[in-house]
Length: 188
Ligand code: GRF
Image (cartoon, rainbow, N blue to C red):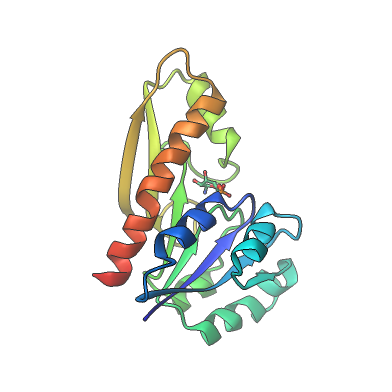
């Protein structure tokens, strides 16, 4: 059985989507969801879906090795960042080489890097009158949004699109492709 650990900082719609995709798959188990935000809606989702969830603060994440040691204890086959806003420490990347992936709501390398998350991304895409946007699923290294790209998917935009409609189009790509890419990596 392949073991999966997810990180999330916010709503957790991707966490729920990934859970639903694998819930009847006896080959994949979501061990735990880890969050750095004690008010994150993802916690409520995990309680409803009966997924173990752990909250951690900066002390546990990057000032000590508590979260790193917790991950080592889980020994996951894959660590998935599903809307996680903190940069991953180098120690995590070295401990889990090519085992940490992230989804970014734009076509990297455009619209990536520190501060480019959520609505900030869609506002920038709109401001620049882009005719397309999409998602990027990539391996995580010690820099924001910089690791090897695994998969990208695109959607076209029109002048009528707003940051909210762009977000909806991007979310639908995330829900379609993220679980499939995870399955490809885990079960290849
Ligand atoms: C998604 O848009 C994802 O691309 C980005 O963070 C957002 C998370 O949304 N990394 P949710 O918390 O899964 O609803």
